[in-house]
Amino acid sequence: MDIEQIARVCHAANAEYCATLGDYSQKPWDGGAEQWQRDGAIAGVKYALANRNAPPSAQHEAWLADKKRDGWKYGAVKDPVAKTHPCFVPYSELPIEQRLKDYIFQAIVKAFVTAQGVEAAKV
Image (tube, rainbow, N blue to C red):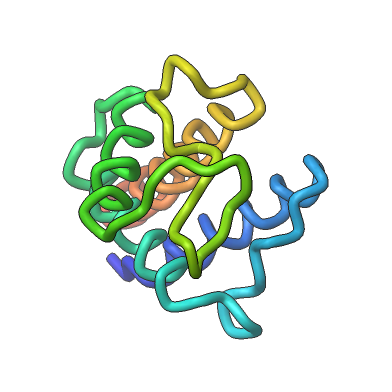
């Protein structure tokens, strides 16, 4: 399974979803996405693959733990230089539009797993 391919799709979907919310900070994978963004998407895919039955809240908590380990903290504005992020809160404190990102992310990973499992079964 190509983890980077799945991460690229998750990143692109997240960027498009964020744009519907007026957040244009997610640059294309090959056109400006920072390494920390790509690394975060890859880590998220690895978590989702290793924890296929985890709820979206667990996906967020894993993201939060990764960010904390990298020195990020809560801030009203996402700022990669200051390492602040408005979603640096427990899942229960996220507004629904932010929670949806975890549902979308997991759905994409599950689609890849399911499709590849179906195709492997056909062989």
